[in-house]
Image 1 (spheres, helix red, strand yellow):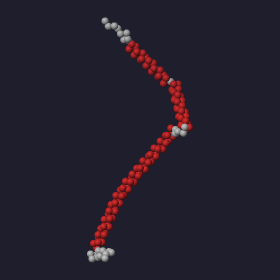
Image 2 (tube, helix red, strand yellow):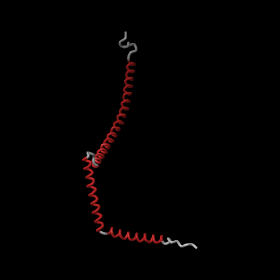
Image 3 (cartoon, one colour):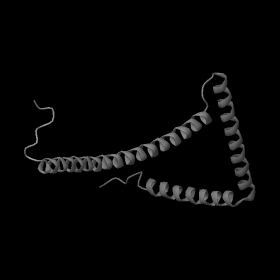
Image 4 (tube, helix red, strand yellow):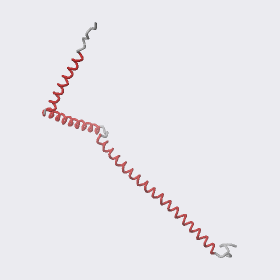
Length: 142
């Protein structure tokens, strides 16, 4: 015959204890969070924590200043300035690229005008040669 398991009810007991604990904690937290005194104490704690953090940051800044090192505020300000300078530099670069593109367009137009001018000069020279009498001697000839 099989022996009865001495730990068979342990699982049920553990589950029951856990449910009881969970209900008790739920009631306790409900009362604590619903209590105006608890909320006031938490608000005071947060305010104290904020003041302590501010005092700590102030002390760190003073220490950094005494060591002649930049503080967090200095680094933030420097980063902001560097970002503004970068934005301005990128804007100038964009404008210069636009000017460069326009200059390239003007150079192309200038090249076309120079070719047309040279062609007009050649046409004018050919026309002068055609109009000159055939018996005329070249200038400076012997």
